[in-house]
Length: 141
Image (cartoon, rainbow, N blue to C red; front, side, top):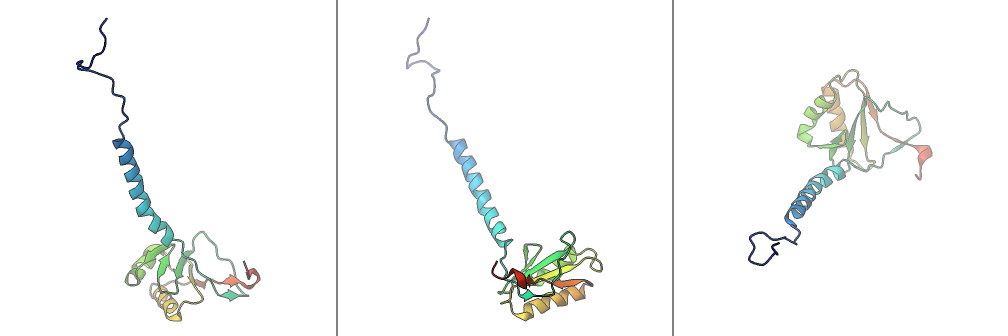
């Protein structure tokens, strides 16, 4: 029987190869770095104005547009540039005559930003437009 010596061609390697672990970690880091801004942008926090005569809209087919106080516009949670808003509305509303549009704007948003959205909605032929409000009875929540 032969014993292992330092001159043998083959010997047991007692090290752990860290390169694959580092590669996987870096790929995961890159994925999280790309996805985090997308997730944060889609969660726009608006403080809606209050109204007493509000109604609930059907959530299934309604296209939601949110306008921030800075004038940023989001169509169904996706940020849209002002010059690309008409194209985004046409894409989100394939049947504008029958599909409702809900415009939600923070109460601190300048009215001109809301008017721009409403004007584009009318231009593409949206027949049902609603304005998002907060129920007065939910004050303090």
